[in-house]
Image 1 (cartoon, rainbow, N blue to C red):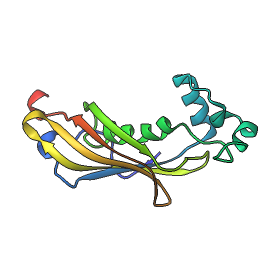
Image 2: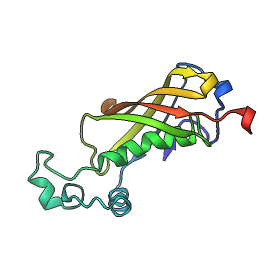
Image 3: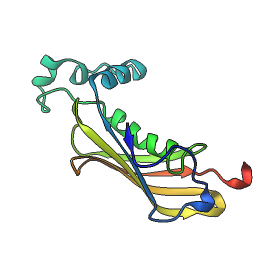
Image 4: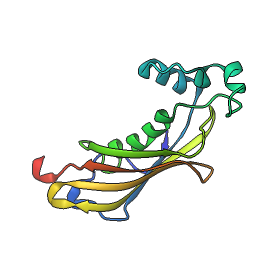
Length: 147
């Protein structure tokens, strides 16, 4: 993984609207195979070249939730980071991700309720600047008051 920030935690007291973090990752055949095993989603559009060639995608694609997992990685590792609890996530899949694609996952803080430790973030994944997934996440951020 190639990312723009160190791992760790940004507490609610230090988060600001507009703050953003991202990571970049090349999605590999191994990633897709491992995700199929963990999720038990063995749809051949993800795993079988011959089958996938005859679909609307004209080739294998990564699981959409594998791509969405990159957003989770940014949230859980960078912003807010360690100790964050997901409360909700919306997702809209805009285009396929293929083995070998470099995906950039980005989260940006759009709203906060400091008293409830809730942070709302715009989320998206892109390949070469073209969005392939977009959504919104709401999380419970860690606080220094509880550390």
